[in-house]
Length: 181
Image 1 (cartoon, helix red, strand yellow):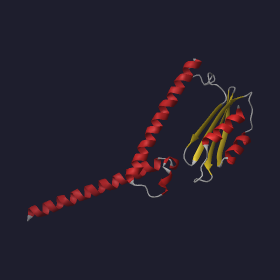
Image 2 (image 1 turned 120 degrees about the vertical axis):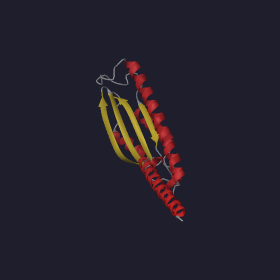
Image 3 (image 1 turned 135 degrees about the vertical axis):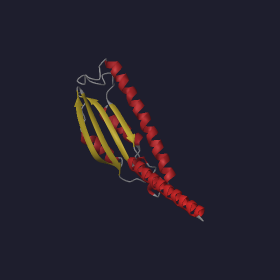
Image 4 (image 1 turned 90 degrees about the vertical axis):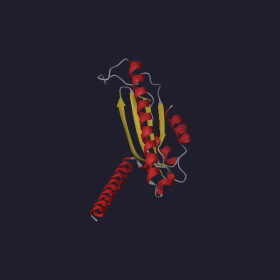
């Protein structure tokens, strides 16, 4: 009789430990899911996404970030090698070997990031870039620029107005290229 109460107690202990483990794992999965930006989830993810799908998407996102970090490190090393500068000297232009102008367009699902780098001699108005983005179906939510040496860096963040239609990024890239070149 004493043996059965002991085994019942160990069963309850195991159940409690397992329940606490599941609660802890659920909390960790929720925290991981909250760290992934919403634009990374696939368009069909507006419905309920299974926990396994969330973990898969988080793993994919982390891999993409690692690849991007390696790519940026390589670009930094290339820029450092081309200009012969050290990391401590930031007054010298970082991208001396860069062929201007540069048009970079990142499609982030329901949003776009546009990076334009031009020289001081080639001027264009920022509103012209905004007009192109709006004509192509995007709404600019943030725009900024900075001047470093003889280069002007423009960064724009835009949301797709109609998610069903989206934005033709190749057309936007071509129009921006025509504008600043």
